[in-house]
Structures are given as structure tokens and as C-alpha cells.
Image 1 (cartoon, rainbow, N blue to C red):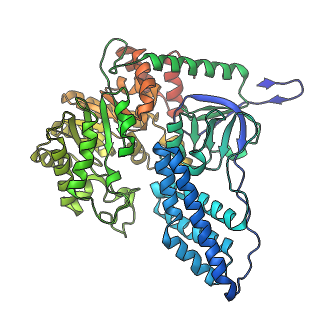
Image 2 (cartoon, one colour):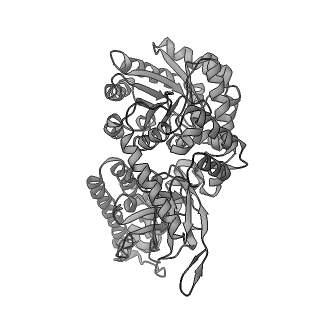
Image 3 (cartoon, rainbow, N blue to C red):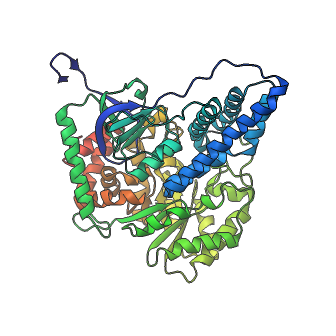
Length: 564
């Protein structure tokens, strides 16, 4: 309870998916809703060409504006904005709008209807594509505002620093956030792979996405956003805010002081590696204080194409990455197509349940040459490189798949080959997988969604997708223990590895390396350096004994001497 002179307010907690970034407190400022459409009017045939041209012109201007923002944003934000600009410039969209105008709709309503059709398609596709719905909604709002001569939708300007709260955020808004004014982000929709989550990490802002109850937050309401715990404390007590600020200051100080290879307080080594998903991320990843790359996602070479990249194209890209990490490890994940990343030359258009279908290593069943070409390209790029190149297969389910992949990789001259543990069956049979592989890598994002039968992009199931779930940690312990028995390293490359507190638990479970976004490694390194291995094992026991994710996090925070 916090008591004022005339009113009494009650502190409450909202839960969602945290994206890291520590914590921040301040008053809420909400995104304004988009302008309402005026009543529809029927367009006379003589006026249709002008209305169609106005609608197409609005789309072109929106695309140009986004490209301008991309040019000034740089980095991850530039890539996201450019992708959104391409959506606005899609000729199929413009043609659909023109057809609607010729059918009698005015420009504004034709834009609205066309975007609704595209929106329905993305929603039906699910996964990654469903998360792009927010991008389409933003494009629709901007195009309609253009054609009606209304102000562009944008960020609030309350004249003071604030916590931004929205149903969801579009890249065009998130990329322009000023961290000096926007203290933290809270969205009702979105998941851990949404653009809001991605760009919040780039900006270093605390964020909670998929936050049930965020719609009830009103302008001016004081909140404390914890991007690590995934909580929003409404009307926090002053001493709670002060304690959170003190923890953040201590975290920043320790992170700045911690350098070099990862290790616990008593010297137990834990390799700290960076995740890498595209070539434009390479400079930051290479400059990070890491021991290499623990997850090199190769999908960027294949997406937005009608046919697979050639071996020569792939070899050139891989050489760039390997050259940036001389003397350091680079773990390459082979193509993980399917599910939320369908490719026309891999994924069957009529696949009824893509998340449980032909994805990852299973793509080789449909097109073996796709994998052979990629392995040959990786091997070619690795020859003459000073990087320590490892390769691993995604979506391995049974030991025979792991053995087959390792055999193929070594036939191409790749010395170190392993498998990802993303399916409960793989975790349960991790001993047999480890016996056939040189290493294992646990992908906690997919392992969580398959263990709990919960779409990892669905914010409404954030409690099940929480990497602190004891059942998920039990699967990690099973895999790590099996690896230790076979003398094989077992890493974690999912979102769990970026959590400094959860990192202690993972090491206590037997994990030997952690791979996360480069900006998260300092906090993880400092956390490990403050705890001995036996302490990590004790904390892991507390997490496993907890009844649920929230209780596990609370027990470990208390056990580590931190205020929950």
C-alpha cells in the first residue's frame, strides 16, 4: 500500500514476457489510437482513377518515409524499417487497392480493406508472420492518414520522460524512440521475437511484451517495469523503486568491470558466446567481449527468395563471418526453414500444421541437396579460416537423425558436428544423441513451446513460455547431464541464456556455454563471476523444486541474496 494525503492506492503486478534491459520507473504515456475512418462513400466511375492514384500515392509516400527513417536509423532498426517499406511498396497491395476503388470504394476504405486481407493471411500463417501483423496495422494507419490529410500516428509527447504503453508498437515508432524520454516499453501484444522486443534490446530499454492487463493502464499512472522478470508493478512504493534503481546501478557497475572469458567465482569456465542472425549484425558481434558465436542463424541467406542461394553465395557470406572471429568458435546452425519461416522452395504450401511439420533438419527429407550444398559451402569457407568452425542441425528428434547429420558433416571435412535439443524427445534421449555428436546445444525457445504445447509467439501464454518453468529446466538438466556422461559440451543458445539470474541456474544444471545477444553478455559474465559453481548448483535445486516459473524466479533471487 502507498498512502497519499487524501487517497490510498494499491500496488498490483502485471505479467508478460520480459526482454531484458533491467528496470525503469515512471508515469505511463499511451500511444494515441489511429484516426477513425469517415463514413464510406461510393466513388463514381469518373472519379475512380483519381481515388486510385491517391491511394497508390499514399502507399508510395509511406514507403519513402520509412526508407528515409531506415537511412538515418542504422543497424537492426534500419533492416526492420526497410522490410516494412518493402511491404508498403508491394505492387500486389497497390493492385488490390486499385481494384477496390474501381469497385466503388473510396481511397481510404480501399486501403483499409486491402490491408485487412493481407492481415488475415499473416494471422492465418501464425508464428513469425502473425507477429508482422503489427507492421501491417501501422502501414494501414499511415496510408489512411496520408490519403485523408490527417497527422501521422506517432509517439506521445507529454513533456517529460515516460513509460510508453501501447497495444503494440510498429517498427517505424520503435526505431525512433529516444531513450532519454522513453524509459521503458509495455505492450499488450507481441512476443519474444516481435520487432518491439528486438528493437528494445538494441536500444537497451527495459520492455515487457504480451502483457495482459496493459490496456487498463492510463496516462500518468506510475509503474515500475522489470524487463528481466517480465513484470509491471503498478503504483510501486517509493522504497521499491529505490531498491530497483540501486540494483540496476550495481548491475551496470559490475557489468562494466567484468571482462574476459566467462567463469564462476571459483574459476569454473563457462564459455560466453554471441548470437548472430545477419551480416549487418557482424561488426557488433565481432567487437563484443565474447569467445565467439554460439548460434549463427543462416536463414537470412534464404529468406525473401524464390530459390535457394547458390553454394558460391553461401561460401562468400560464411567467409565474412569466419574472418571476423579468428581463433574463436563459430557455431553454424544449418537452415531452419519451415514453421514461422516458410520458404517456397522448401515448405509445402498445403502443410496443415507447419510448427509440427517439415522444418529444420527434416527439410533434408524433402530436398537432401539443400543440406548438402550448405554443408559444402560451410566447409569451403572454413578451409583456410582461423575460426574454430562447428556446425549443428536444428529440430533433431531422434538419435538416428543426429548420427546421419554428423556423418554428412564430416564427409564434407567439418570436424565438429552436433545437434540442437529443441524437442522433448531429443532431451529425453540426449545420452544417445551425445554419444553420436561432438556437442549439443539447447534451444530453449522451441523446447518450451513443444514441451508446453504453447506457440512461443503467443503473448497470452507467456506464463507457459517462461524459461523459468521448472519442467523446462528439468529437460535442460537431462540434456546437460547426458552430455557430461559422454564428455560432450552442452550449451544453451535460446532466450534463457541472456538472463543473468537464470544463467546461474543453467550453469548449476551442467550447461557449459551460454550464447546470447552481444549486449547481454556483460551482465551474464558479471553474474557468473559473483557466484561459485556449488552456489549455482544450489540455486538450480531451488528452481527445480519450485511449483511454477514465478516461484522459481523468486526462490533463486532470494537464494542469490537479491531482492525479488
